[in-house]
Image 1 (cartoon, chains in turn red, yellow):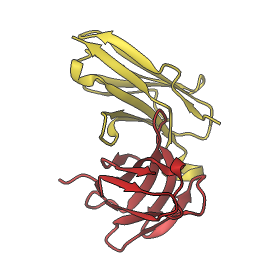
Image 2 (cartoon, rainbow over the protein chains, first blue to last red):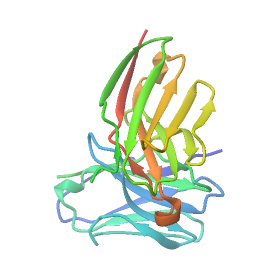
Image 3 (cartoon, helix red, strand yellow):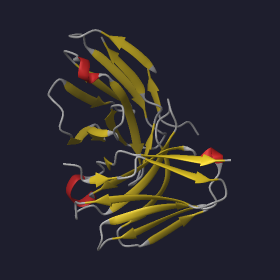
Length: 110
Length: 114
């Protein structure tokens, strides 16, 4: 079975630009969560979506937004990019309490 | 406020010996705990989990122990293999209060020497 997939794998943007990251969950998983991991830290929770509804939001500014589609795939949008947004963005899907992560999208903001 | 702490940034173990990775937490609402392994340029891979109603869970070479009174959990890997070399993250969730949101520690880098 295919695991969680994310696209693109790498992305370079400049300050002020906007970016959209995509995630496809494991088949049958209805919950998708997004995390940001900066170097030397553990992943930080950004959003959780379940059945297309936002179930949780972490301590991130309104520049970060997300949505989930009827097929349970998800997009994470970040507007007005800052240098500090450079990180690995991870998507996870779950059926029960255990979340399974994708390979991530590495975003570099110059 | 670091609610999940992994105080050892690195650990080096001889192949065949036991690796013990430790994790402490402060939020008494946490009721589900997980360990993930992460290789460079990959996402975290789920290893093993434990519910707060248990004090031990075992899966092959991996055993997780939970001490709720001390707010401490540990991951034991026996025997350690060179392929176990990776960064290990402890994570916790509070199902009743914040759903599936995972709170991670900062990770412990394990090096298994051949």
